Length: 122
Image 1 (cartoon, rainbow, N blue to C red):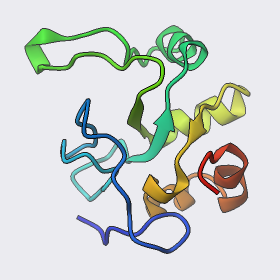
Image 2: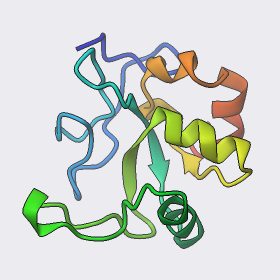
Image 3: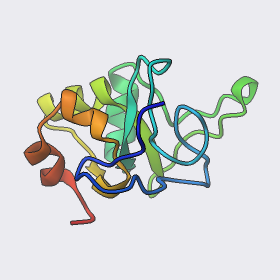
Image 4: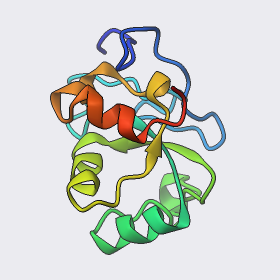
């Protein structure tokens, strides 16, 4: 795992414990070498974003019992894949985020200014 530092340089705060999110399912957007999808950005899910995400092939809203995955609902926080967030930015469909819960690894994919643009917690 990489250091638990957020995109602003401070301690990485939890993203969601219900549902438990993160690549490591520890509630945080911590990342590491074994996480090639860089699930490092803590989003605030909306119905609009969930529909968009499903449309572009990243269905995070449909429950999958075989993986004990309840599906993300509007109003919940979730650690989204960094490349998927960058794609949503390009498509002008990016969700709001919690920057204090977004890992600094996201800065390799999008600029700090971009993250700040979508941050709810500044």
